[in-house]
Amino acid sequence: MKIVRWDEDAYHFAAEKMQKIGLHASDGFFLDLYCLEPGQEQKAHAHDGSDKVYLVVKGQGRFRIGDEEATLSAGESVMAATCDMHGITNDSGSQLVVLTLMAPPPAPRAK
Image (cartoon, rainbow, N blue to C red; front, side):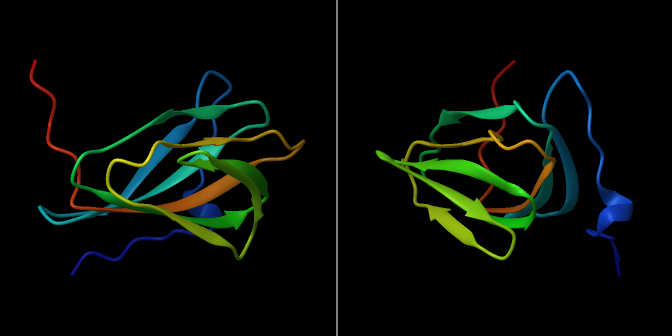
């Protein structure tokens, strides 16, 4: 049994870019923490064949799903269905932590 922490003890921030902390993963899904300093973003992108759920754990940020944008705060979540463009911008003045679930995980990129 793999037990992981996803509270403040697991958060990791870096000045250079958003940090992804892998919590659980299988062939069918992944669960990560995304940690964003103010001004950082996850550029908008899409996944063919995968759904992604963002759950805001700490702070607030601007989330893009398709053609819509909304500011979400701790306790709120949003889903990007397969092929929806999606991304996050931390345009607040404080740190943002997002629990991120994706199923199935994207196929590995060819090297």
